Image 1 (cartoon, rainbow, N blue to C red):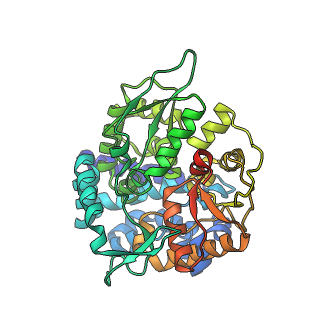
Image 2: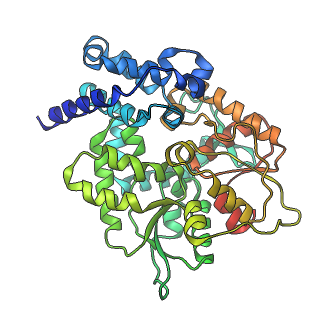
Length: 426
């Protein structure tokens, strides 16, 4: 009964939010998916029209409705450019939760979300085993980019060029920290996130170096869980709320001014999605308190610490920057990562359409890889055309996509996080 009441409540919220859409079609001009397919069903306006009659459509063709809702990158470009201020991402996430509540989770997603993601220790153990044996199934492609491909034909991996799991995840390198705050000094908590922990631990290490350089103490609790975006993107509110509760518990004992992440998606999820999609009243106060403290590390370094551009380093390659959707569209953060690049002594060479989506979109990349690859290929072409010696970004998912696309094109352009540049200049 509680779940039914929740579904009815979300449907009422949808009805209230949908009336703000004027069907002007502005989203057509900016949607990266519509640019490739030209299908009205793939753009926000088409999906919002579908949701206008969700109850009827849900009964008539629930699988069709679900498929249309999931053909979306959740990049937020439509919302950022909507003249009516329609909360498109909020609407789509609620709609996906409604459909999952109605249809139930597919068995594979249920096993991944509730069996693994919701159990961080088991998740860490299994991926640790996977890291040890991944060489049996993968082979290197490009040493400069650190890309690999499947050793054998695999329907799941296809022709992707991917980053292998790190030999040592970040939680094995730095299990926990609780540094003393200097007299009158700053102290932050650091949320690692799944992809940094298991694929790019060097980025998490760079974040700690950057903070230490500026005299900022760090609280890093162990047993951190996923931010929950894979679960809520799949409509699984139950797992999403469980992950939130786990993270609230591990950060509850810390004394810190801000919660920082080096993952654009984690930042956006904790700051905005937690507040809009966590439905349990007992979580609301703690969620709001932590969400309001959450910042991207680059934003913190520039806006709070006051990091400034430095003199150019002799012989350093020029850098082009890709704006992650979840920073640019969801949080309006574009200048701060560029300032961090300048503070590291690198010259910035802007690429064409730096702020357009790279095509990853999390689960979208898994379900619609050919579309993801087409969008990402255009981004990779822009990186190459910029003439820069390396490309930087602020999101590990974007790093994976850029690595894949550049590796497949044979472009020898390293992909870095801006914090790596700031911490080591490499």
